[in-house]
Image 1 (cartoon, helix red, strand yellow):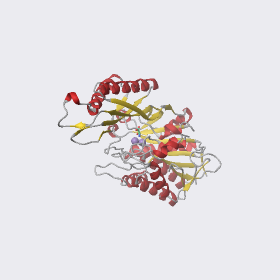
Image 2 (cartoon, helix red, strand yellow):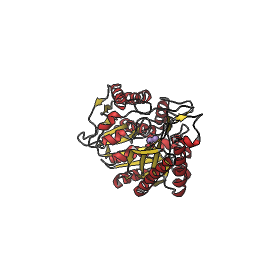
Image 3 (spheres, protein in one colour):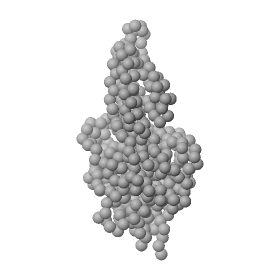
Length: 416
Ligand code: HGY
Ligand code: MN
Ligand code: MN
């Protein structure tokens, strides 16, 4: 009797709850930053669940975690489905976890139905998608897509940890995962993710078929002034980098987003050195996250950030140094894989819309080496990178059903 693979919604919801307990924060979110003890616990749980089902588990040199279910032709490059397990410091329970656990649920559904796929199907949990502890983000997928990682050995995290040491410790913490080189031929990649924006919910649309991802650029602005005594240094004698930084941020917030609805400019982190309550800072460093669907606008906005920071620094006898710490050009996904996803949505008779992603994702780099596409589901108020992030259980299950259907088509499943 041929069984049609079906998502077990209750099992998926139980998994989401179990993983949400790893790094759970009092406000209902998760703090499971890349390569942390919490990240390792989540990886271990997923690997153990996989081994219990008889799947094989692999890790590469960037600690990307792969869970493999064989196909009828093991020589064919696998179809990859997945996302990431790491989170923001005050992240939500669904960003990354929904895609990774739905991919695992799809693998279990294939196994439950003893469905045969021609190609092997592998679930992947990419390392350090967020980039909040160790910049840049999407490290695991970037390396898989061929990025030169030599310079990454020197990276120190926002908490002072060594990336190289944390990577080694994470890999060593999962000896059950066989080692494999970074990068391999794959037949395609499909990622399910929450929209992290308001449009699907506003349009009461259960599914988004993602056609492209906008470009992202991260800058680090360092304004150097002169440390001094808070009580004795009069205005005329001050070279205060904090005043310059605040003036620059104020000008940029007024000049960019209000004049360009597609532009995104965010200052997420600021630090003063020496950071003493009664000393004028010697220097102030702040980060700028820029996004835009048009590359030429991203260039123009970056140029404006550089010009404004320099001008506001010079006006206070300070200097400004601006460095790019991350440059992720936007890209369109494969029309063929987009069609596979859309056919899956149509076969389930679901309303949907095609859309561009405002957030970056691992799929953006994997699209450089294989046909890739993404599926979005709505999240409440479009909220993400916030502990209140929430997805209706029905939407989570619907997203997983689309992922399973698309994976069956993409891996040319044949029921035995
Ligand atoms: O920042 C991003 O776009 C992704 O959600 N990490
Ligand atoms: Mn994500
Ligand atoms: Mn995220």
